[in-house]
Every structure is written in structure tokens, then in C-alpha cells.
Image (cartoon, rainbow, N blue to C red):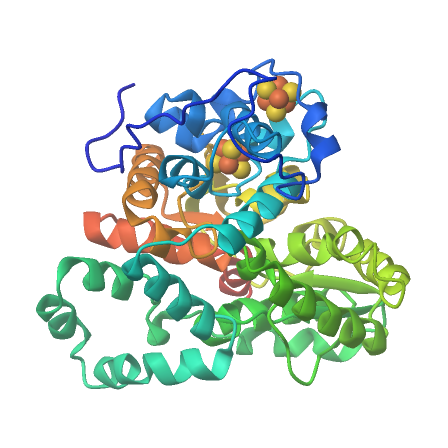
Amino acid sequence: MAAPASVPDPTQQPAIQSPGTPAAKPRRDVVDYERLFECVHCGLCLESCPTYVLTRREMDSPRGRIYLMKALAEGRIELDDSTVRHLDLCLGCRGCETACPSGVHYGLLIERAADYVERNHRRSFRERAKRRLISAIFPYPERLRRLIAPLRLAERLHLRGLIRALMPGSVAEWLDLVPRRDERVASDSWMQWTASADGPLALVHHGCVAQVLADSENRNSEHALRAAGFRVIELGETECCGALDLHAGNRERALEFARRNVRALKRSGAEVILSAASGCAAAIAEYGELLKNEPEYAADAREVSARVQDLSSLLVGAKLPVGRELKCVVTYHDSCHLAHGLGVRETPRQLLKSIPGVTLVEMAESDLCCGSAGSYNLTEPAMARELVRRKVDNIIATKADYVVLGNPGCEFQIEAELRRRGAKTRAIHLADFLALANR
Ligand code: SF4
Ligand code: SF4
């Protein structure tokens, strides 16, 4: 397939010199250099890579990017705009990891490469401003709340549609990503089951963006756990997990968020740690790796990571009370970090099929990224839009009433496109869907 017209076209391929003819000083701090040799260049990951599937360019594939990282580390190419463009276009979805027979830890490689890019490459003024704005707001719930307060007021006055119509296209698309407050699934319906909980101590990490835009998913996860017999505890205040910074190449602040979370999660005594955002859950599950060289944190980080579990995996074996028959057709979207990061694919489907009245229909390419990918849909809107169009084409083809998923970012991204198309299908998080079934 040719590259879609609206996807940025990195036409200039980086000039890679053959080994032994260095163009620049070797920089072994680009990535964990030894890990690059895990890749045997077989290409079996290519068709699992969303950017390769859309552009058909080797340098937009996992193998191509690994080749670029190696050439950079060995000083055979410069860190120029073209090289950065290919690395920037990576979603960090880790689809290549689960496809790779050699066990390449691509997620770790691209996180380090992103950090290297941010330390060594000067972006355009516009790009720097956009990235700084995202970095200054999203990991801090209070700032995000203040930013969207005018939109919430407009919603109360029934003026959201008018405000959107008055905005330029790109701002209108950003606004589309903010879910409507009055359409969240309330969590009151679970209360009747909360008293009997006497199982393991469970904690839902509320995240940063999720606690502002999708708190129903946190609350409904907690209610579902109580209904299944877990004793649910809460952190007084939840810090960002650091995933946004890791993907954006802001490693130092990601490490600081990780340290604070390790301290708080360890102190909580939680035996089971979850997040309604699969990207956050996968990030916490990586704290052991992230902090392995910090003696003060390494052991606790390993312990915290080992306690990360997924909601569906905990509920599928439990006798979850179901309040009513929910007659509908659903399809399931595999959120990247749930499927590729935590390896969870079957239990959400089993859980959905166990709800009376629910018919599960599989969509094509259910584990191909929807383009949300943390803040990717804000930094790379053209590629993100192409991916969500493809995702929604596949969803609409199922004729489902709901597309159920395990990550708020996917919900915002897919729901915005479903609305733009006027589709009848609604995007909904698994925890909110369970709340619907228990009304
Ligand atoms: S992380 Fe995703 S986008 Fe990046 S190379 Fe791997 S499959 Fe492709
Ligand atoms: S990342 Fe894995 S699947 Fe992809 S080319 Fe390298 S070894 Fe093959």
C-alpha cells in the first residue's frame, strides 16, 4: 500500500555508511548497545508495525529503526531531521515485540533512543512549544482540570458543539479527544456488593490524565474488584506513572515519577496493583527494569512491578455478580500495552462472553494500534488519524453496538472518530461496560 497522502512523508532516507567508514563519533549512549544485537534482521515484525503497514518504508519499521539506532551508536549517521523523523513516527506500541521470535526488547530500545533524541537534537520552535505544553500539563491533574474547565462550562451551557464549530480544524480535533463528562458511566450501581469484600488488598493506580478525563474507569474498576471479593485501598494522591515522559524522551522526570510511585505503592501494602490505563500498568510493570541500577529503589521496584495485574485476569475466575442481561453486540480492541506489554488478550474476551446477552464479534486487526499511543495523537496527528480511520473501518464492519477496550487513551481516540463518522457504535472501557451490565 502506498503512503497515505496526509501522513508526513519522510522522503529523505538517512545516508547510512557501511561499517568501518565512520561519519561521526560513535555514541554508545544512544541505546543499551548490546541489546541491538538481539535483532537478527529477519523482518518477521514488519507486518505487525502500524507505521510500516501504512508507509511501506523500511525505515518506518522496527527493523529499520533498529538499524538506525545501531548506525547512530556506531557513528555511521548523524542525528539529522530525517533520522529523527523515522524515530518520532514510532508509536511505542510494542507490536513488534510480540511478533519478534528473537525476543528483542524494542520498547526499551525506543525509550532510550527517544531520550537521546531529546538531549541531542534541536527541534523547530513549533515542535518544541507543542511538546513543552504537553509535558507541562498532562502529567499534572490539577493543571489539566484548569485547562479544560472552560470546555466543561460550555458543556453545561450546551455550547460544546458551537465552540467546536468555531475552532480551526486541528484545535477542533484536539477538542474531540476530550470525552463528554455527562456521558461517563456512573459507578453507583455496584454499591450493593461492596460490604462482603475480604480478599487480597488491591489498589487501582488512578493515573494522571485518566483521573481527570475518565475517572469512571478507575471507580468502576474498584467496584468490580470489590464485587469480586477484593479489599480495595486507595492512594491519597496519585502521581503520573511516567509513561508519557518515557515515550517523549524525558527520561529523568520519568525516573523521578517512578521513584515516587515505588515509594507510595510499596507503602500502601497493596498485594495487587492495577491501572485502568494499560499504558500505566505496563509502565509500572517495568519499574523493576527502569530502576534496576538504583540500589535504594531496585528491590522495591521489582516487588511493585511483580504485583501488577490486569482487571480482566482477576475477574475472569471470580464469581462476579451480573445484574441484568445486556443484549448487545460487542467487538474488542486490544490496547497495545495490554496485549503487547502485559500479554493480556484472552481474559477480556472471556469476561465479555460470560455476560448474559452479550455477543462478541472479532474485528480485523484488533491488535493494530489506534494511533492514540500516549500523546502521539497530539504530536503526530496525521499518522494518528490514518491509524484511527483504519481502526474505525474495522470496527464499523463488525456492526457492533460497543467496542470494548482497556485503555482510556484508546477510548478517546476511537470515540472521537466514531462520532466524526456518525457511527452508532460507542467506545467503552471494560470497567465501564461491566458497570452497565450491573445496573
Ligand atoms: S513500537 Fe509499534 S510503531 Fe514502533 S516499531 Fe514497534 S510496532 Fe512499529
Ligand atoms: S525485531 Fe525481531 S522480528 Fe524484527 S527484524 Fe529484528 S529479530 Fe526479526
